[in-house]
Image 1 (cartoon, helix red, strand yellow):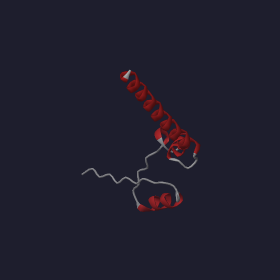
Image 2 (cartoon, one colour):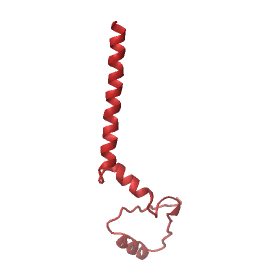
Image 3 (cartoon, helix red, strand yellow):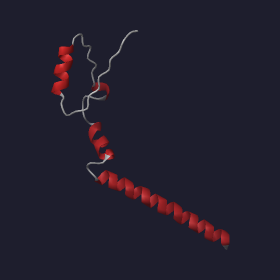
Image 4 (cartoon, helix red, strand yellow):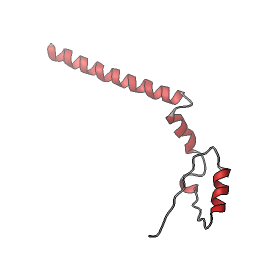
Length: 83
C-alpha cells in the first residue's frame, strides 16, 4: 500500500510540474512584450541570417552615415584586423 501511495504522489508531482511549465509558456506567448514573442516576431524580419550583408568600409564617413540612419535599432560593428 505504501508503494502505491508514493507512486501516486510522484505522478501528481510530475503532473503539477508539467502544468506549471505549460502555464508559464502560455503566459510568455500571450504577452506581446515577452522575449519569446519578440523572438518569434523577429524571425521573419529581413537583414538577418542569409539576407544580412557585410560592408567593407574604407573610411569613417559611410560608417557614420549608416550608424545614424539606423538610430533606434540594435547595431553590431566588427573591427577585424589581419594581425
